[in-house]
Image (cartoon, rainbow, N blue to C red; front, side, top):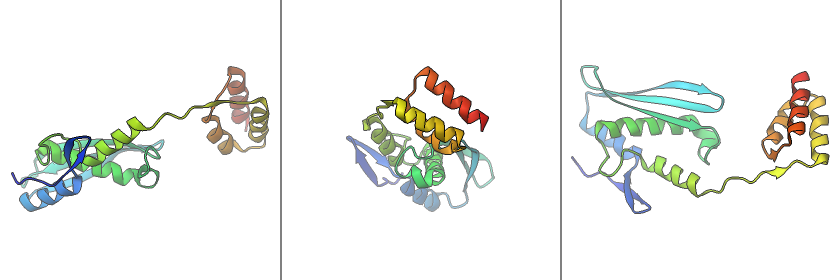
Length: 169
């Protein structure tokens, strides 16, 4: 097999998906590659890529899962990123670009970034902010209140009161 171009991440070489696709298109001219969305809801995307031979037999598959907003690229392009990862995995499962790993450069870079980023520390919800959120919930601003609730460690009574106010609107 032709040696594919790699990039180095933390001392390991990885083949980018575009290199796997170029190799596939050049060396498997009668074969096909397709993708299908298995799940697209609640800001999640699951895509399966399938490689077919010239007789339309499935030769390999790859599945990828992405969450909207989980990385910089996933803020605007989580579906596209998911599809690219699924294709990379399907081609890796076919044996293309797996000298060191089935994972693509993109998958590894994203994993390294997520491991190195510190989890956000939530602050306690002050009475003043709690009262402001409760007022907003009672005024029908549910989307605003829900988006803020995740930023705080809520006491049981605060969470109960906010959820009750949100459910009444």
